[in-house]
Amino acid sequence: MLAAIAGTVGEQRRRHLKVRLYDSSPSIAVYAVDDRAFVSVFLHGQLAFRSVQIEIEGQESLMGAVVFRELETLWKIGQQFEDVTQWQTELQDRACRFGISR
Image (cartoon, rainbow, N blue to C red):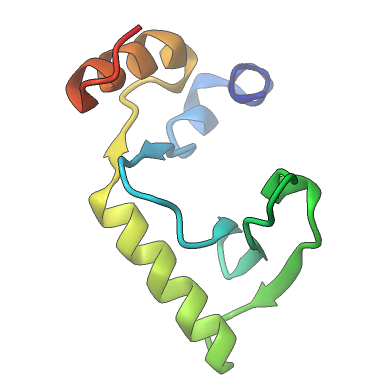
């Protein structure tokens, strides 16, 4: 999926695509673009992205503030991929750093 997304945009736009990986247990599944986020929880026996998604716009509501604060925390602790088109190599490098190399 990541390779497909990276491959659909030119180099100028691709540099705006930021992906980070962190080595912490997830609190929520969250995908965000600008001021919109899609949030899901981790239910047993079900992938979060296939579960019910809650759409949140902005940080004005209590839920919005909590979600975007958590997203900021995850972003700070994550390690950014330098080149999303080389995600497999970068993922392997991260696995070595996290001590889980294949």
